Length: 293
Image 1 (cartoon, one colour):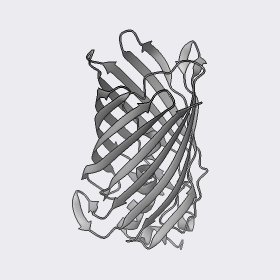
Image 2 (image 1 turned 90 degrees about the horizontal axis):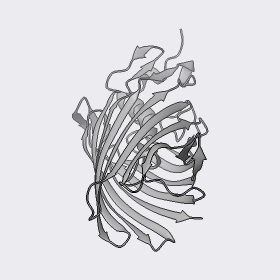
Image 3 (image 1 turned 90 degrees about the vertical axis):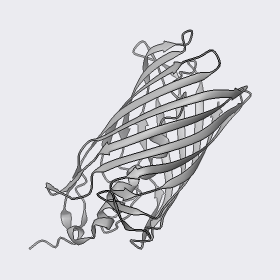
Image 4 (image 1 turned 180 degrees about the vertical axis):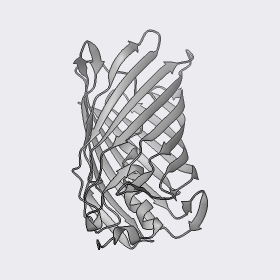
């Protein structure tokens, strides 16, 4: 009889171990206000994120079952972007490299190192600066490059390929610098065939949407807010659906972004989960530095 040690882990371990990576790496995948405004061809950007996330309340089916999850995440993410033209459209091929240190006190486990690197590019069928309107389509591919150990509940790597298709629409609403951003995406997951005891983990598609408003307040500076929703992602082990592994999370973020001349942009934001159906309620601070080169 096969030793199903992984299946005998408590529900909290399954949720923390397999859902944590999507919470951690969301910082680089998440679109910020005006990110879908295309830069001129030939521009290169270095985008560096510093993120800290904490969480204590652990929910199952919308009910708090523990208040001592003791989730602590610190991450540095580097994103390199090159603006060009591909297939007759503006495009920005890019690579994103996360370095993460994370631990979950409730599980007594931690992990650190380079996470799953991902590659992608936005393509803009609409890039109308005169009318302040942009529409972009962005495919991303996550590579299974992150450190992963099958006998650990917490890993910085997911040990599977995944694909994200994202669409973003940005529109300037007023002459006074009010902008709206609407983002929708779907993530499709490959299988992790290296769980403990040789089990296989699969996951349903994850759907995300965000709505943002930003308002100019200084020369090159704007305040903004974002509401985000994630839903889906139920998981199966060897084809058996695991209870309380579907995601239904609402998050509110407020931030401020400031260009310093044309030299660099500084951004700070605070995010807090408003509702978490299954998983750890988190809040966190992210700093972002954008440097053209």
